[in-house]
Image (cartoon, rainbow, N blue to C red; front, top):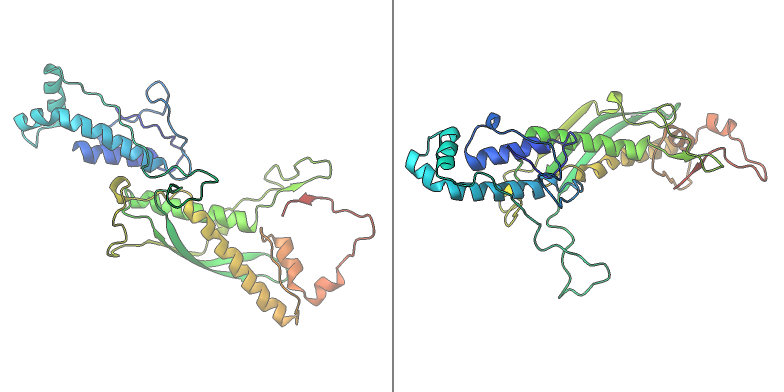
Length: 310
């Protein structure tokens, strides 16, 4: 039975931990049962956040497996390398060998202290950096302000992937989350301070039609020395949150589309496109003759119905 300290929330953490335990112990994946996280089994766990779940839990699982492998080494030498775990475990029980282990790991070399800027004593804030690059192509409807993402290409350096299928999904999901953050998710409040955008009718999140029509994701591979010195579990990198910012490429592409539309309408004013690039903001920045006819100038003392934070 495997009980990691991380919380499984759909990011595939348990799947990766089972893979690591399976490889370290030399047993099939279906021979490992995963117990939900609870402080009954694992205490003083760190939060499952900041894409550190695989790093912390993976190394802890490996530590526990290393302990078991050290204890079981004489048994394996006796029964041979091809002996099933059932035989090994039964023999170890009869030999009164401890068949449980508690693994622990902490990221080395980190421990940044705010205010300490001395290069001789300061410690790094992060163990490594996860990097990526993306490019998006959009189509903007200048009459309505609506847009369509035609294509997105993403290249991510995630080290040696523990499970490529999971990591592809993590990158795609994070990008769409970032796309929503920078384009359609706008928080608005009423004048009395009450949140107005508190339901699906007023607060929009990305749906299936917002996914790029052509969506290409690939990993950085076969680059000599790119992962040299990376001491994370199986030379992998955290991938849950870093691709979120790549969703800003849709915002930047919309800005270029607006520049083109404004040039057509002979608008020379400086373009300022704030995030999120909602339908209203995009339409108001096109600057065509129809927009000018419908422009309403607020009178003295008039306030916007909604309050937003920029």
